[in-house]
Length: 495
Image 1 (cartoon, rainbow, N blue to C red):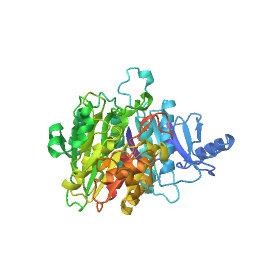
Image 2 (cartoon, rainbow, N blue to C red; image 1 turned 90 degrees about the horizontal axis):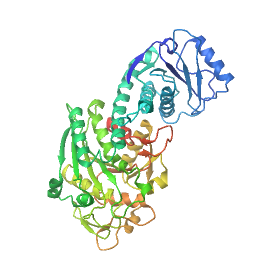
Image 3 (tube, rainbow, N blue to C red; image 1 turned 30 degrees about the horizontal axis):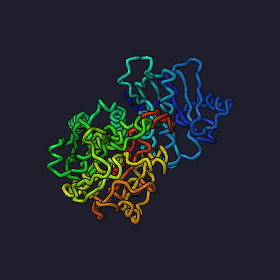
Image 4 (tube, rainbow, N blue to C red; image 1 turned 135 degrees about the vertical axis):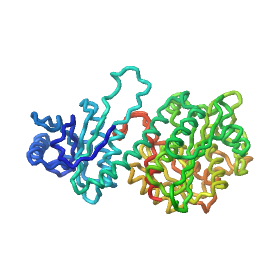
């Protein structure tokens, strides 16, 4: 999608579809200045009872003229919410509508919203438009099933705000490119994206993004002592991989050294604790944490991140082969702790625990975040739209929550009740990898916390809910969402 900024009024742009917005209580749409067009659109809003509620849409086909072929007014709702939230959702909906209208060229009039800057609004519009235009159609051979792509977007802004809008467009494109990368990876078929293939993809992304990249093969992991991670992969013929990405900013960097760790189970059958068939349908998405980390790393150079950042991708398959690890097994870990396997479907924490312990010991970070589709319990607690945020550090909680709000993602702080750790301290090993039926998202986070020094600022993001929509939800089409990538990018822009 080609994106440009113009100071010309929306009403004179020769596009297939012109998009403007109205909040509840508005008599006319925002984002354009032509008095005659405003009057016509205002009359149309009144005659059709358009109220400007979130999700409301109104179409107007003007009678000839040199401007847009069609107008679309989208409702913003009564309350704007977090900066850019209403605009991002409205633009996403408008861009998806454009495909139905076979509108390849669209223009959007940037509205003024009280208390929100041009930078926030313009970036939200670009991110919403790119999210709405996304398609994963590389395997379709029937062109009739492809939606009409939006090939060009013009953002119409007042002269005084053009500079800020252009800067916002650039940042919006950086975030959107990264999020699309994550969505492409998660949407890919699991037999086409094995751990080895994922690692090769990461190497290509690193080369294009100015990152250092090292791929650790099975022998390397055995030498390093990442025993728990290796055990998860015993049931498959696909060898595990760990990808270590490193970003070093040009010039004088800040003193932060941040580590991102992503769970990358490219397919999760549940192991010998086999999942029911329906539960396996979307288990190609169990690598969404690693996809989010790779996506965030790919954006750092262009986003101007000033911290040194390392990304670790733990890439494995969890299958049921003759050598698969078993319930009741006792595993060694990089940290020296022993873990009893209570359930082979609680494998993600076994992948992450070795990476977290290794990163803390060898990279000496000032902060660390892991991202994982870790527990169904988090989905039960928060539903399909929100990720759980677990941390013992208030500053990490506040910074990540603010980044999520700015990026339009839902991130909800969850407790880490220390007494629940007792649920994992049972049996013949130091820890069990499950803690029983209750509080499963909390005990999973507590398990990971046992492999991170208490003094190290660390956060765990459980993205099991929003990483993949099995049906259309919240305006997003079914399939991968790129969850957590926008939040990580916003956070790393600010450190």
